[in-house]
Image (tube, rainbow, N blue to C red; front, top):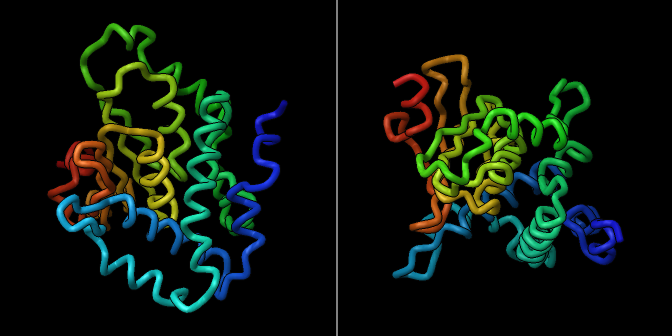
Length: 232
């Protein structure tokens, strides 16, 4: 049985494309990413997101529409699909594949590295004796796209304490990478939206943690471990 056969009824692609949205697909996709980043970062004392106000701003245009219920369904389908593909050893970058196929501007000349090459590069870059190495390493992709190279690295590396860093100038790519790393179970990582080629190119970032759990926003460059390692 092919892995895709596991999703005959629901895939992220099917649910997204079969929903009647009030806005263009790119806006809805970016709104989905932003809302899910807010939703996974919960304050244990209030039971609400640390970014509740931001979440409400994004959901407000959909609040009176039936399609609002599709956002949690999309998230469930996304996590289920990513888990099954990862366990099967296949490319589990569901967000990146959807973006490439349906949203990427044809004139953009953007190219996401194929999964097989990502895996090869990860195996070539990470020490083969990682399972005996108790030292954490910094793994950086300075033009991360959807985070596919870093996702492959998490599957090759044996040490869960490695720190994963990604940078991309495109806000949608930065959000995709942040959510992808979080759903990959990265214990500690960071994604920056900015221009890697410029020391003053930092715009904002996302810090990924599992303890405390969530994706936390970085609004000041001096708080960005990733940027400080590159230019500090």
